[in-house]
Image (cartoon, rainbow over all chains, first blue to last red; front, top):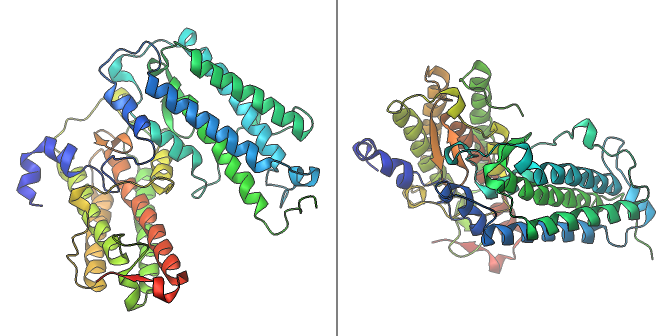
Length: 230
Length: 194
């Protein structure tokens, strides 16, 4: 790589030479998501594309299944096990995910009426798969949930929490199937990611549920996690 | 978790310096613990060896610093409302999340240009020193210019520097995993690149 070459070809530098360092943008897992905001900047959206709808549906269903399967057959002791007072139990995690789901669902489904449409060059510039990478990364830092989203015993028993989650997620999935809302043109702040559009908020809901499914899975791997029923 | 400030401020500089210094320290500590034979181990045929990973980090460091330092001067500063909308934390979390693998760009793909680890590590040290020196002394407003990142989206020059530290962390984890897996494999299954 010669220095004069870099200086002479600014666009080459930007697009080709520096494609990325850990990758050329060839996302192996979510190529559909990779395509969405950057390439769509110039076109007018009047709703989700088929690819966007498929990707959201897949991520929402898969993360629901992960959370349901990791808690399947839990005993009462397993639902409420916490290794220390500051760590959430499986029941706490499920309640938190459901509270967030309900809150975000309300924001997404009212976004078109609540917020003005942004011009194409004033929309979020973060790629869709980054939302999932950020939401599911549990290694770097434990994030503190805002007070309103912390578990307080809503929906009673673990079974009640599970039913509430299933209802909330089914409602989100039904919205994804049917909506013609222009979610790409509406954006509001996500406390971890930054400015995120309405569609990306749906992806965040999926990533958030998967993050907590993994948190529960990690609980089950602790030596003191209660034994399952014989 | 704060929204990026619209200007480059002292705490930005401290955050970047800490990340660049600490990520290098962790990489060096791991590399210093490797036996000579470890440097050619791979997880599978064709996968990167530890020496390949360090070469990739050298190439990445040079490419990113050149982008930030040289391209920045040629671009006009953006008004505050046009600056990054991605939080710094999101850059760090996305880059260090290894759920997804990415294909390295040609320009930063290892070419086996270092005959031995010593040369690669010395090159990395020199290039990281250059990055740290730039961050320490620069008076550029690193928040005022955006550069497209094919994986992350549009991020500012400062976030590209954070990316360098997080990227080193990502590959240090990969290196640790490569060694651990190769060490656990039965002797007959251990792959040593020629």
